[in-house]
Image (cartoon, rainbow, N blue to C red):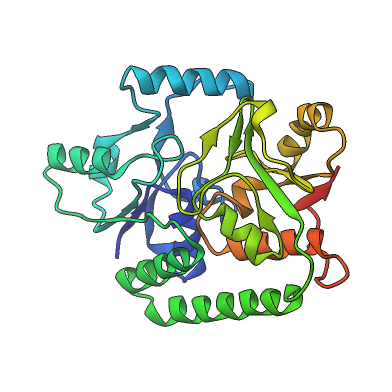
Length: 291
């Protein structure tokens, strides 16, 4: 099957279930597996300028949203020329990826009858269900079911390790200028890792708050949306200045927090290891760091 993945999480899932060789199109953000953009044509790019600070990005996003302008640009002719049979996209967040409506409009202009699968999970169980669905729709049901079973076993192991332990209050900041409280599946990640999430709404959208209005916490996790660990570490400076008495962790959000793929389980394990180091093994370097 010829698959176009217009969502980084879907690209990761496709590769994890053995469909990487079926991919005929990806986005500029697809970076896992490594080198995928060198092998597969890129048909989606960002409309945002490069080199902006977090505050500048927030201002540009708010301005474009207010004017009804898209955050992403799809090369519709290139996508059509690749003749995809299955297109993986999303409607969860217009800031994070190209929405399904834009894909449907592009296909209508091209006269394409490709099947469009919108991947819109709001919880860890729904992420696992999305992995299974992509595998089944793409023709790899056995690999997908085996992957999901393995991920569930790892989640069960973490749950057993943190069961009955004191749960620190954990504040996850998905952005720092201005601060955003993480929503969707992120509070669940904290809970599964043995913490008690404060702020944010399970299965809800991320929300902006002022620094004085942040809830009290025992630990702050700086996990800026779309950023790796080095950038997360750089963004902890403001948090340490404004919340000097609270321990701070930095986390690779792009790979292990906001991308709804198999590595969310890696993220839960990493956070559990940071919150309960005497009960859960330390994660490999590059996932989470204590500041």
